[in-house]
Structure formats: structure tokens, C-alpha cells
Length: 134
Ligand SMILES: [Ca+2]
Image (cartoon, rainbow, N blue to C red; front, side, top):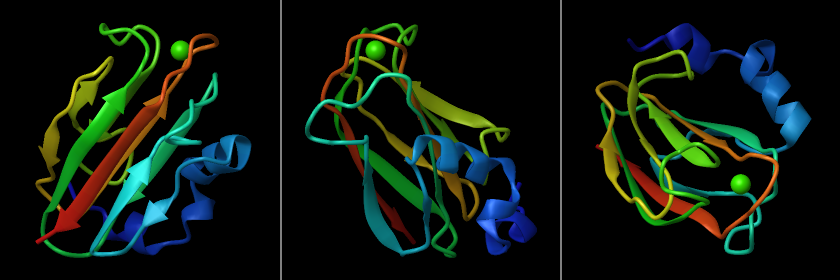
């Protein structure tokens, strides 16, 4: 479900900003197209990250294409990417990526949320993903 109050409001009034201030990664994206990468990309990402990006360009639907993914492990127990169909990590999960998995995700509404978490050891190059709205 699209929640315009959250998208248009001050992002620092919700729990997302607590996360941003702690980890200094992830942000809100309002451009009609753009990209996100893991911290330090294409150098190795840090341990113990929990990054959240909210993609909210304001058009009908969003396509998010992961062009490069290089994470620890292949079973999502260590480091991973989760994609949610809406403005927070409490929305329906569209899918997740680990290891070298790549995919393209489509929102049903105007907002997508991406979360990237890493554990306490073993880092890799991370990921780059591009999004566009139509
Ligand atoms: Ca790791």
C-alpha cells in the first residue's frame, strides 16, 4: 500500500532516520531514475551494516535492476539484500539477493525500499542497482 504521509513527511521523524544516523548509509531517493550501491562500492563493504534506501520518485511504478551483486555466501545467512514493495521494511517483501544473485524488481506502487545487511565478518564488493520509474 502506498502511504503518501510517510513519503512526503520528514524522513527524520521515523525509525528509518534513527537507522541512518547510526550507520550513515542509505537515504531517500526522489529522482525519477538513479542508482544505489553498497557502502564503499566497488571497494569492499564494511561489516555490521544495516542500510535502508527508500526510492520514491513520485511516478506510478519503479523498476529496480541489480547489475552487479557480490556478497558473502549464497544462502542469505550472512550478508544480504531485501527489497520491499512500499515505503518501509514492514511492507511486502518482493525478494532477496545473496551471493552472486541478480534480479530485477518491480513495485506495485510509487515506492520501493531496499535493505542491505552484513554480519560481523567477511566482506566483498557489494552491489550496484539502477532504478527507473515509469
Ligand atoms: Ca559478511
